[in-house]
Amino acid sequence: MKDLNAVTEMLYGAGQPMAGSDMTDAQALAHIESLRLNTGFCLVRNWIWLDLDVTDEQRTVLEKTQRQPVMIYAHSVIYDSARRWDVGDFVRTSPLHRFDEGFLFKTSNTTYVLLGNGVRKRAALETVGRIC
Image 1 (cartoon, rainbow, N blue to C red):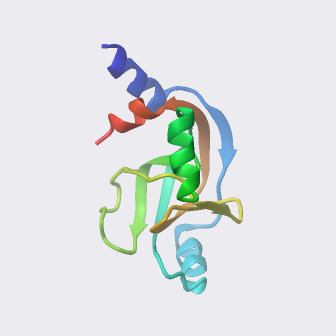
Image 2 (tube, rainbow, N blue to C red):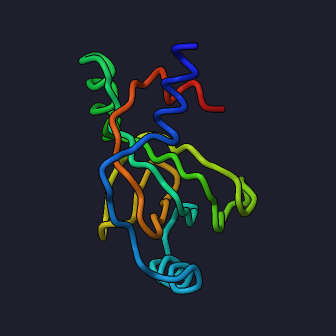
């Protein structure tokens, strides 16, 4: 029951407000396509910035691969260029590689466009791992 409560709190509990892009879906799609990225991209809304509690060992592994202990969970996929997710699906990213323009969350393989407002929370890596 403790695990379920932790996941529920992470997904639906209060967090620190955080702004993403205020572009419309169409504007965001045009913007990201204009960047001509060499990776896939995904437009998301209703997102949560998750600062992960990790061990020193886990942090070292992330640093060696130029990643940070941060992930995004988004309740709503708007568009996925690789068609991995349908419109309306949820998505959990891999760890952050780079954050640009105040709304482009880049992982090793994908750029996530954070649209609208989100929240920032701290979460245990194990709690995030419990989301399928």
